[in-house]
Image (cartoon, rainbow, N blue to C red; front, side, top):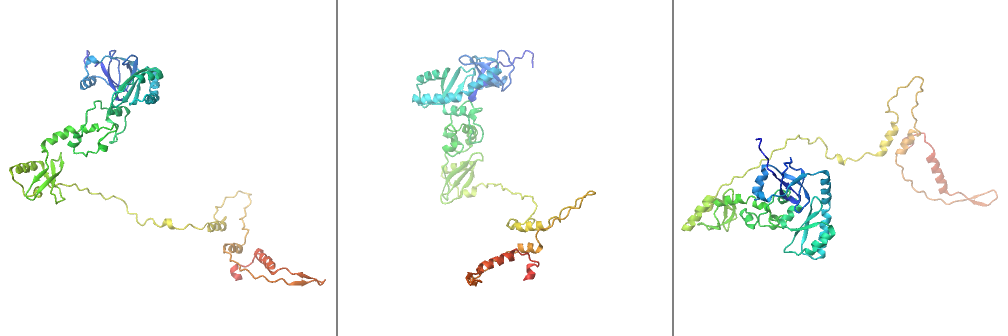
Length: 427
């Protein structure tokens, strides 16, 4: 760069709600994009903002926004210090509470207005209240009460629906952040003609944005559609043929195709725009083509070939009925553990002089184990026998013990007596 080169002395600063303004950097402070700086306030004091643009790009931005150099009068004070940033953050924390209090004051005065946002100045001495209203509102009494409540300078600014959506922000139907809250500064009027030129369905739910108005993005591709529509004839409704009248159904602007159909047929016939112009000229002269199907354009359809996935055949390696298998009996597992107790244990190496441990002996005999495993059979109830009187030496009769009591005691003795033979041998 030449030695006498001097950078452009104007910078662009961004504030809350996508508000951007130009400031003079007379002291030639080296600033980077995104840095916090302290600038001159609109009515005194200072404000804190982010540097959004520097250098020659600011000159181009001023030309785009039609801002002359004479209108840029406010200056850049310094880079924001820690004290400036702390005070600025405290002011921003008060905005939400201040907005709700201002709304209650407006409701008490029965004003037909909606306070949508509050913007505090960086030095916490002034606040700008943004509101929306259908008509003019007399808020002089409201300003008096707000000044008494908040003890700051008050500025009221009316905005439209689009400006309100830009200040609040949000996510659009495209999945991205709203254009009005990021980069869009000039809000041009959007009409339903923009949707008609682009062959869009006039559905207000799809064409309206979060502000309730038509989406600003409808104007983005409007010029391209208008250039393509120059070659397409206007107000084409019917084409006269010898078979009958063909009615216009659809137009593909970029492919230069127009579809027509006969009243008693469901098929749509695609024709090129040049051929449609020729048929229209023939109809003006009183001439008619034979049939539009003979002149239809063959449309190439793209066939999507599905690739077969490359995988290994694992059929039969795993059983589908593995979940239907019944779980094993827990009793058999416990019995096997008792039988094999000590047999599967690894032998330990013994030191010299250490006695050999004896294998644990089971308390029950094999016959008893086998007997315990077999299910018990239900015993049939025996008939009670009448008790016969027994004569004593004195001659007096005494009652003999009942047979049922004797049978119970006999059964108990048999159950408690260990048998030497297995049950199978006894039977």
